[in-house]
Structures are given as structure tokens and as C-alpha cells.
Image 1: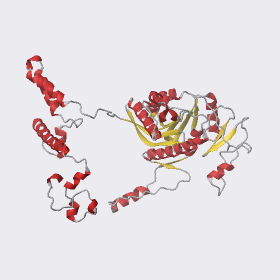
Image 2 (image 1 turned 135 degrees about the vertical axis):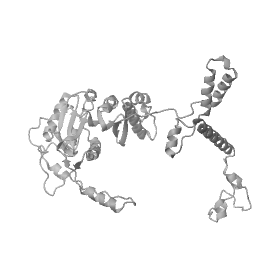
Image 3 (image 1 turned 120 degrees about the vertical axis):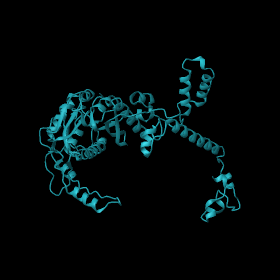
Image 4 (image 1 turned 45 degrees about the horizontal axis):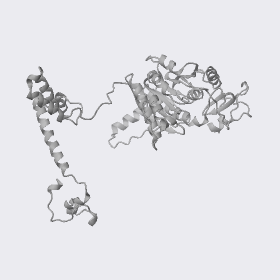
Length: 459
């Protein structure tokens, strides 16, 4: 794990008394203004300062013991917004309504032109039915989301989850540093979220590996390392629950943007290149790496949001379990000219091999396969789709192969007469001119000579 550092925030003021996070906002004052007016109680350790971000007030020592980066506030804000919507969507399936302070009631309007009166009445009825359970921020919901922040440092992100994201059962803020874990516990108590947030001092990968059981998995895993997340991805795709959310940050942009293609390949399985689109390529590289790691365990990802911001990239993906195929070879799997030579040689000397008849049969079937169509269809399933009797296989294959070969030959003959120079278009009459609708006049590529009868070339 990288050494923990602290970035000094010039906006942090240590002259005022320490703020009290639990103090309610003043009447007629906005939340932001009220937060700025909060003052902490006494009891701060020597050299400690209080950093305010979102709804959280975080204790930070002045020594180089933990890391705080004010530029990442956007990252934390966006993550709170994404997890809130994820919780809203997931809990709605369980009949639970998520309430966010300051958020207006959402009105859903149907734009379908086919909505009838019965549908409107049904929608109104459904809209009138309130969910049996309502959850809001700061409350512990026993059937809510279990969140893990694997590399928590001071616990700022986890504290914000507890204070700003509704519908949570628990938040585990983990860090390998004992000093960081102790600070996380203090910040949880300081912000009054000890009932939701638990501090953990473990190796992040080992913690996630131990939570791979279906009943122990987390609904949300957030990984925001100092550098590359590559060493944590294998554990993360296993420790997240079915349909759960992974929030991954990569700050090693020098590697992912093309400065070291070999290093990028060793970490993510892809070679990065220097190009104007390097940041989007970096997003696609980490998504590919996540999908590859998940595929090892018969899982796959569904990207929800992928962004490149400042000096890092951030992806939000859901992880599901299911059998996936591919990637596979999509081009022809036979060289028909070569197969024909082998078939002719075997047919011309049948006594050479004891299985000559079988070889002839297999190679004959190969020559009848459609070279530009991968995989295959069964006659009975096709017949079921169009609701008809199933024809004999030999009759069906013989008919379709002959028809497709005739069409392929006709298409190839047409390509021999293809037009590569627009000057040749003057040999063809303009259909729009004959209809009186051509607006190009003399600039038209086609002929406006009505006596020209070279219609066969148009067909």
C-alpha cells in the first residue's frame, strides 16, 4: 500500500473554535451557510484541524499521517449521487421509498401516444399507493445496503455516505494503517454515525476475499487507491453481491494514457497508446480489465457511468452472474479451395485410408457450410418460429445452399461492374428528372437525356 500523506488545504481555518457537526441549521439559512457557521466542541488533539465537506466535518492531524485531497471532492460528490440513485432503484424493488432531504417529489409523465384511459387510471392508482417503508439519510435500515470503502484513509468518504446516502444498513471504512483506522473511528463518533459506520484495519484484498460468500458480500464497494487499483480488482469482483455496485478510481494516468504500454498491459491486460483519445481509451481499458476479472468467476459487468476528470478516471459498474460466450473468431473457419483439393485427393484414391468414406462425407459437409455465417440454426427451431412443418434436412440444406450460391454469384458479377468514378454516372438516366423533382440541374451526376434508355444498368 502506498504511504499515506496529507495535503494542506489553504481554505482550512484553525483560528475559529472547533465546529459541532450535530448542531442544527439556523432558520432561514441554507445548508451550506449553516455548515460554515458550525463550530466544533472542544477536545481536539494538539495539531488537529477540522475539514468540512458536504455534510461531514472530519478531524485531520497536521502530521503526515493521513491523506486528504480537496480536488477529489467532485469524485466524492458524484459517488454519493450515484450510490443514492442505486439505492433508490434497488430498494424500490423491495417496496422501500428513499427520501433525500431537499429533494422535490418526482413526477413521472408518460409520453406514449397509445396511453388509454384505463392505463391512466392504473398509473394514478399506482402513484397513490405509498411504499410501506420509508428510509432517509442517517438512519440504519436493517434490509438496506452494505457498503465497503476499502481504502478509507481518514474515513471522509464513508462518513459522507452515512450522512448523505439513505437506505444503508452499514458502512465499513477500512484502511491498513492503524493510525488511519483509529482516526476513522473518531470521525464516525464525531459526526454521530457510529451506529452506521464501523472502522476496520485490514488488508483490503484479504477483507474482500473473506467476504466472497453469497451472504457476506457487499452491495457497494468503493476503491479509490493512490495509484492503480489493479491489485484489488480480483477480490472486488468476487466480494460484491449479485447486481451490486463497484466504484473504481484510477489515478495512474501516466500508465493508462500511453506513457508505458508494457506496464499497462501487466496491470490491466491492455496496451495503452499515446493519442488524443487516450482518456477515453483508459476508461475502456479499465472496463475491459474489470470484465476480464469478473469472467473468471462466471460474472460480467454492466457499466453505469464512466468519466475522466482532472487527473483520474472513475467508473461505476454493476456486477452480475451469468454465462457469457466469446470473444470468438468471426471470420471463415475453412479455406474452401484447399478443402476441395483434399476432398478430390481422397476421393481419387479411396484405398489410401480406411476411413476414406467418412472423410469424404465430412469434407463434403464442410464445402456446403456458409463461409460468411458463424454458428448455425436448427431446422426444427426455424420451423417452430414460422409455424410450419419441418422439412427433411437434406431437402432444406440442398435448397438453401443452391439458392445462396446463386445469389452470391450474382452479387459477385455485379461487383465486377461496380462504379468507382462518378463520371460514369452520366451514362445512367436520372429518375428524379423523369419525375420532374430533380433540383440539381446541370450539376446532377446522372443524365437528364430522356432519350437514353440504358435502364438495364440501373437494375
